[in-house]
Length: 380
Ligand code: NAD
Image (cartoon, rainbow, N blue to C red):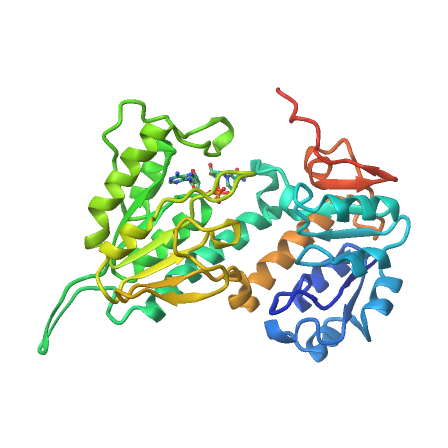
């Protein structure tokens, strides 16, 4: 089959879904690889590097979509891209089917198969294809780097001839994949790191990364924690306790990184205006939940704002794209693993096995039908 990666159309998107290295691996599965000219440029992969890896470089999206049997992308397709799909063709990309129902209909009407990387089930066997996690890991790391870039002091404490410097204090709110990456990065830079999550079971992971778990004095510690490993909305009483704790911490924190999300909902507001006002001038808030409305009251998505009391609030929504070489490498590897499972005989023939839980879970349109949401996972 011909696997092709077009140039991303989303403004500012620097990632690419195929790298020269992933193309070499795809060729070992018996596939041919194509890339649109310039698709890898912003991630540091030149057309020449693709050509040297045996990839055919083609001009323009129409040629790419016309020639490829499987189109691999990062961002959900725009309408014009869906319109270029043809019956039987496969598209693999982030898709967010619950938020993109019109696009989903359109892809079904085109009789194309769409595999949504955001729908890969989060089970152990599928970790190698878990692009949400690989991108969240990068976002957590980059959040600390952005915080450092906007913070006028060291992270680590130092005793120098010119004076003693205290270590920075960092609070991470939400300890999923991104939060844990942020904790690891902040701790390795020498900050004193604190972290909070509604799921008490993550306390051990937080501590193993070198941070202190912020305990709440609340009788039902399971409040806000749901089955399936994801958080649920907390009760008003729990939320009040949580906000009370954050109010207590705010004046003492130099950097706050918020990553709290609940599947399918807007981000919970957790770092409120009065907390920002209580922070010291020069402090930084990085809101990784900005795309879903933000955990901080004052976050402006895609912007960096400085409050009157001198607190910088970073609401960028493109952290992985800001490290496009790294994120493209990991994303392209996630895609390559998906294609490995779709090519069981390694003979260049795609076998779309809807009996396979991972392939079934990620497939959102197939054979003229919308196949989202998938059936609940089988209970063993
Ligand atoms: P996420 O990005 O959806 O959410 C981030 C974090 O915010 C979560 O830890 C959540 O508990 C927390 N949160 C929600 N509301 C909060 C609040 N009010 N206050 C503080 N924190 C709050 O999470 P994620 O990174 O996608 O991970 C979610 C779960 O999925 C975790 O249990 C993780 O271990 C699991 N997971 C499993 C796999 C796998 O098995 N392959 C892979 C990735 C993640």
